[in-house]
Image 1 (cartoon, one colour):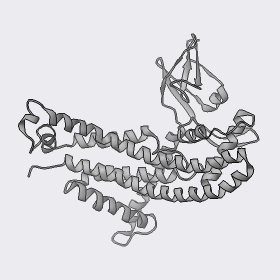
Image 2 (tube, helix red, strand yellow):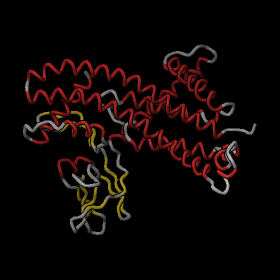
Image 3 (cartoon, one colour):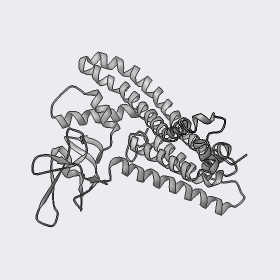
Length: 351
């Protein structure tokens, strides 16, 4: 039901933006929901877009520019003074390799992509989720300090079994005696993925952003796992890579086939982490929106067909939403578990 409401808003937005009754472009609508934006749009009322205009911050030719994203809507340009009398013109590219991104228009008609550090919808949503996570942990810590040995209550009572699950069933079993030094990261990444997965299922501000369905976010998380694994690796860990035991000597020297394979494996592990999380979350959003979009597509051909399909689509959408709720927990668990397994190989000691 939430998906239907959300998509109905987006459909109305498309109609108002075009200013005419064009046919619904389902693919463009779904992809638009998945991509990042410079504005957090709520709904359209009588042709007016209601939402939050987020700050655009770009760095170009040694100068920092900052302005509201409202100046970039509907193809409008933003002109700012660099201080030397020359004007800098920025716009959101409508096509090409920078489509949907802020670019600078040059005098010869070409565009250049500046260094973009804007507070986009996804960035703003990350600020919100991180704030929620910090508050949860602070409240939990405060509850433990106040109650001492007594059983926790409130937020702490909910957080305790989850923290113990990550600590005992994931970190300790996968890493071993040295698990405690990796535990802060594992708890952080587990709650970050879980909270953002759950927030992404709610299509109302301040929720609904597609954080873990953004490849840049998942790539950064996977990069942290890669760096921690290799920067904390023991001598035995690197020995397994460059002098793999149990392998014929000629596959290690002079052919060095096994070191190459092991090195490539170290690089592909974080890549798989990033793609798995990104693909699963993105696929869920696409399936739900696909079921709901078909209602509007059929309604354009026949009101009766749209009405008949709406019941079936609603049932399937609710079913997939329930699966997505399960996936939110499963993907947080899988990412954390695999990270812990990699840390376990890095913490390997000589037998």
